[in-house]
Length: 240
Image (tube, rainbow, N blue to C red):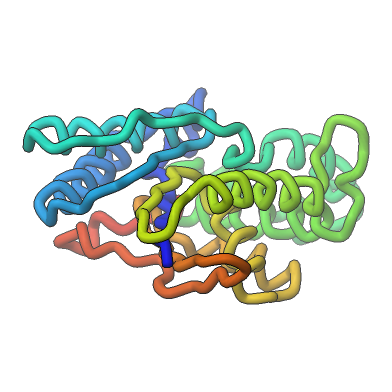
């Protein structure tokens, strides 16, 4: 059996001009994971990430922790398959129509604008709107030009998973630094959940968390979900 550890990136910069950068807390979360793994002497045989800055930066901070301890770390490989779905494109595709037809969405956006993106109230308002938008995307309308559908996204992620699994000999440990969406797609593959459940799982995946699978031949099994043993306080735990 081999092991796949999927790592969600550290907290990104929600509400800033460029979401794709790690926040200051996201940097600390990523360093905490690197210190934890290096302290345990965890050996990684292969390491992958998506192309997005928050994913790559999280990986690099873990790699730096290994270097400080004089431990070996594989040369990372970047795979587009593990990129997150394009939330901005999905929002721009569906939100204008929802603002016209759904009073709850209009109220949520007004509250988000009034409270601001960094306040707890603003974040809750945005999450409610975002979940409604994602429901529409999940329903299949995302096949519009310029918007990757849920099934297209899932197929892309699972294509990357197959490439990693098929190239990994027995007894090896592989890490993939990615985002909540790809992790939820792989969870769906392992558990056979409906699309709606898979999408909902993405909302509860913590920044910097570890989701672990074992695989051999046709077997692909979940053995750990959303773990954050590297954190020593509740203040380190974030979801967005």
